Length: 171
Image (cartoon, rainbow, N blue to C red; front, side, top):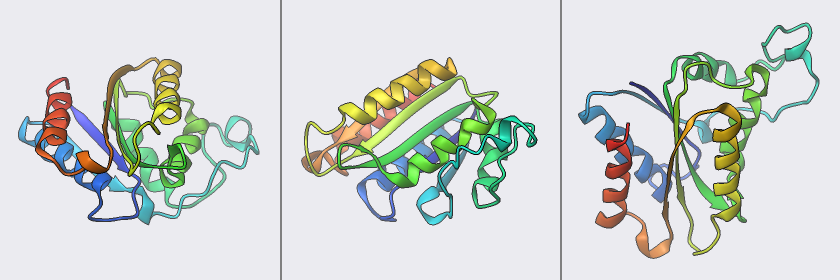
């Protein structure tokens, strides 16, 4: 399967990046074609709500930023994995921008499954992000493969790695 991982943490060696890399390595070892994009290093603006995409744009966004690199990847992906730290009870802004910019195409055409990887220094902060992810899966009509979370004492542990590996087995 073609797997696209959007990793939103600006910390290259942080906990979220580690989970995304573990997912990538396991999926590749299982024979899947995986692309991991660190969207925190991209210049992706939020949706302007201008409706150009649904009028004159015929599904194309009027903004020409680094999101243009993601549209072709999203178009071909069969599995979409979002990896994000939780900042103030929700997914970080770096992952929100690409999610919201998918408005122009409504839903990626080939995506059949989605997974969510989240990290935080605090426990009990995942409800809002989990609800958003669940709602996206429902709206797009894709299988929700679930979430893996890692609070401060679970980060970069063998136990968390095993949870990620179990998720990969469901591909």
